[in-house]
Length: 444
Ligand code: GCO
Image: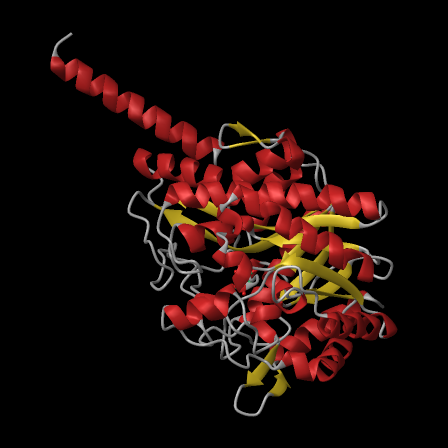
């Protein structure tokens, strides 16, 4: 065969492969202008909620994050929303919104500030918070680890070291009996994917490392820790409902005719999403056995924000705008609004055959100009999925109020309530009023 024929065959082959990929893996986009977003129908028992995390709202913590902020000269989290002192007022906001449930995290560094030293006063405060929620008819959902942990644990090597996992299990086993008779819903860990990749590969979260190998090891260890904690807590109280919050970010090829973009997409989708799903379903992750993780969840929490248009030259920081499709609205964080992605996100998680709790969804939008639309599009999509038979039980909006947004400090405002950090005043945004209304309507 002369070279011209070889080149022609290769080109035809390439085109066939691309056509196949494009057909097998469509990237769905809806014509939002043709959709009536006011038409939202949810089942009567659907659970409406909002979510926060301890280090983002409590203020004046001392943990791996505060240490990182100081060491790397980052924006100090400082007083955050001063929720540790203002939690009663903040619970009033939950009542005002009319939510059925509130997802929040308890801060390991407050509860066990030094190894083996238990702070009963902090436990007492959390206990009061739980009682206050229950008295208001709001069901608590507690996250045991939401990115922050004690400095002593970090200094031992944190989740990087397999031999440290028993410390996390011991903390969970110790704290669980205080609350497990009042609280049924638990998330062991928040986003093992974000935690490990941002902290150990992208260097933007503590401990600020830049090694993909380390990130993969940490993700695996966090999943093993999750599995161990799940079994321990179920042993203590078999009727508890325990899962974890998984961030599903969808990677789509930036150029849908470029095979390299497709290949990068497959790799990233496996590392970010597939590996964790495989751990939970098959007890295998990155080619090795993580048996304890298999079937270690009663539900799967979905934190959904966006899709990332991928090429081999993916930025190694979140500080720049990511590419977006022409017709997509770009949010303040720099990533596109893509409610359609919920279809694929729930389909992937559907492989687990577990109820899905949407443990986070929201948008950074200081001016509140996108949030109303963002909220309605995502809720419309969820209502559609439920209609099609997807088992989605709840929706927790991220977030109740503006708060400390990790590497972005206070620049990103995700709240249904605006927070004035000068005087800690909370003001309900227009989008908050819309959410309040949607909840009210759905109960009629
Ligand atoms: C995460 C966390 C939250 C964030 C939220 C907005 O996804 O990083 O779970 O703590 O604040 O997702 O970015």
